[in-house]
Image (cartoon, rainbow, N blue to C red; front, side, top):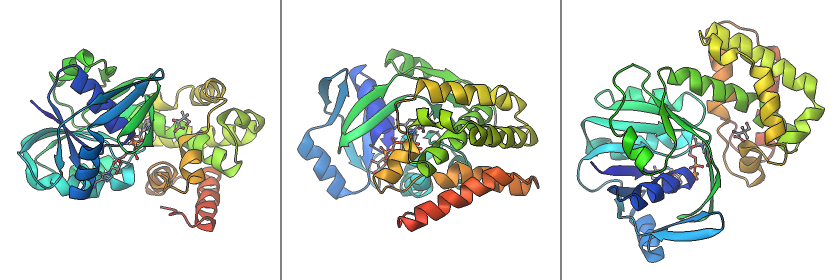
Length: 303
Ligand code: NAD
Ligand code: KPL
């Protein structure tokens, strides 16, 4: 069965290149004819790994046209997920499997609600990649991708294809817990790096702020019924800060480059869940408001 990939950015191209070189059928779905022409002019996806670059001439078509889609990786930003999924909805065969590869939470549920006949699986990844230019991607960090089904259901047989392609993936029986844990890590680190204009490692100089956020995120995770995601949160956050000390967080990079951030699916989602559960979360809300003001002052969306 062909892997269709919508969202030919950093992770979408990274998955496409590895599936393609393993000899698995894969095709890219591009936004429109202009993007398709630009892609064809380049001759394929270029993946740069350990300084070596390889070109993969992966077939591509526009999102609107083509054969029915049976397995789709949606690899766009959380704020684009609903509209991107809608652009291929008419092509989805009954029972199509969609893998929603977005950070944070909220976008996955929004996409699933619009596609009740599809099986929506959620993914959480710690792999790292960035775009040097269009369809030219650097594999920047090895990691792991967790996949799971919010509604249970069997482990997909195609996990072996990911293994065959060298994509480190594991099935999770509680993918929401995984996504919440990653959301909590991102909420404790990323906004502070933007507000303090610093690398991850410099947050070691703001231990009280980090601890206060971890404490409230822990309360939220317990109230949401994900106690395991709250375990050792602060210790883990401190470990990530130390291990990625020289890096700028993804949110810092988005803001520095004038790109929209995924704030609504990280801190925004945490605060909305806090409202729903009548939790005070004063420090988390204060950081959310400061970050929103910071973005607005720079002409960037605050949702
Ligand atoms: P990206 O911005 O590099 O790529 C997204 C691609 O989707 C872009 O090429 C964009 O043009 C395309 N797109 C958006 N809307 C579209 C539409 N309607 N039709 C067709 N294409 C459309 O993003 P990314 O870095 O690959 O991140 C994807 C998700 O994975 C994000 O939620 C991100 O937070 C998460 N993530 C990224 C990394 C990483 O290292 N890049 C690591 C872990 C998680
Ligand atoms: O995932 C990250 C990001 O920058 O988005 C880390 C480095 C773990 C910080 O939250």
